[in-house]
Image 1: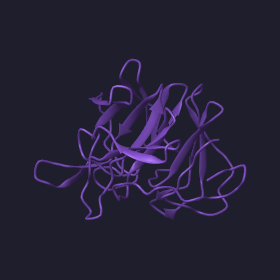
Image 2: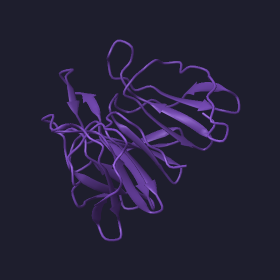
Image 3: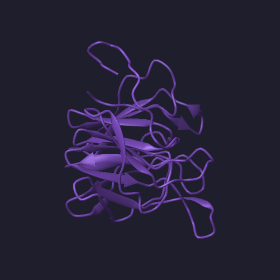
Length: 221
């Protein structure tokens, strides 16, 4: 999609078909990470797309196959947070695991786990920290949990809860603040937009979406 021309054009398909994956852009490439494959199994596949060559390349696989997770870039590193993994019995479980990928070294490293396991959450980076909002808990309930991760000291901090517990929502950072859009709450889809100020560790409300949305995405350009 070209925002200036307001137009779409087709590109080469991913080598591996999947859903519930995460995708980020870093170093001039787009990385498609994990997800459920075409038979519904969690996969560890990571593929990078180079817009200049128009080619996909498979890179180092995830250490743990997962889906319904998030990925966020800080200082050229890709942080993969939470989601669903298979336990030793082959059952799908919600995880608190966090891994980081170094595109230059083509290697993964496990980091400090989240304080709370979740899936269908959202992450965004503000001033070098990763903020994780909501999601579904291990019991399947929508969560109002809000936590931040500092990559410099590999430490998580629990912050002021969301005003509305939600999952399947979107978040994006803009001008030093974090915006959370829509999602699914105990009362169904929501049009509610919340905005977080790191300086005061407080939430406020922004203008509602024009319609209630879930399983949506947001990006600041």
